[in-house]
Amino acid sequence: MEKKEKKIKTWLLVLLFSLILGFLGGVFSYIYSYKNFYSLFPFSQELDLNSWDYGGTNFIIQDAKKVVINQDLKIEENIAYLSEATVGVFKKNEVSQDLYFFEDSILNGLVISSDGWVFVNIVGLPSFDKNILKNEDEYVIISKKNKKIYEIENLTYSEKDALLLLKIKGIDNFPVKSFYNFSDLKVGQSLLSYTFSGQIDPVFLMSKNQQSGIVNIDKFSNSLIFNKKQDDFFRNSFVFDLNGDLVALTSFDLEVYPMSDFKPLIFNFFKNKEIKKAKFGISYINISNVLSTDNDFYSEGAWVYNNGLSAVEKGGLFDLAGLKTGDIIIRVNDYKVDSNNDLFDILNNFVIGDKLSLYVLRDDSFIDLKVDLK
Image (cartoon, helix red, strand yellow):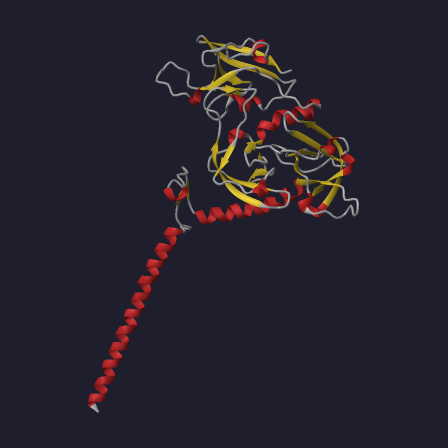
């Protein structure tokens, strides 16, 4: 009997010891798993995008989980606006004028004025149905939101500038948002590509591909580079920031161009009823991009320079104002030329009929030159 009791006690001790070991093993396994999972997905830590895992992007996100949630909420808030402002252009359906399909859209556009002017993205398109230029009454504009169908009242087109604007009939209070300033764009900024059919692609800005060398101001254009190549779905689509402001367009070739480059053409049309851009006639270098050991060399401004050649085009607007090769443009009206504000981007804020005041450094003296844009 005593032997039996001894055996039972021994088995109980073994069982108790096994349970303790099992419990400790579970605790250590949990700690190990938790640590390793969150090293892969650091939602409660700082997210260092400068590490090799993230391609060397130079910033850190604290509390990454909260950032992702906030970004999702921002995107959701703007979908309603984007689905109304982003429109498709269709050939009228002769069988049923109330029946259209997304894939039948011949062009994509965005409403950019409260009175219904639509910027149609034709940049890089090999061709499009140019019958619309003569017979706009054979086409309609459709907004995805509420499936509204609009007649076209008017249009204007410039093949040279790849610019087509259509006027929606009967609209005078459409809610529109602003064009995003190129100088305000930051590397690493979250952006949103959006198509008329409702496809969304969140992206990060990896580079503002500005020219670091000599810029011919009348031939230059900016471009943007994202953290990934966009799918073919996003040909001739638009790019917005998380507040819904218009940042850029994507061409047929999937190149991305800031909308600020189109501002002088669009706003000149709104003001002067003509698609035209002022011709300034200079070449220059942004001094912020120049590496120099000369302590006397000015650190900011636009240096009117063309590698030993004349940097001022004879008969151009800046030539008529008295600008000379070797001058440094320090300021244009209230805009200071520096690393954040390139001369090209500053001049995109003006249209024909505006008056400019150039604050210029010449031979160690400052002068003020007046320019009438015409």
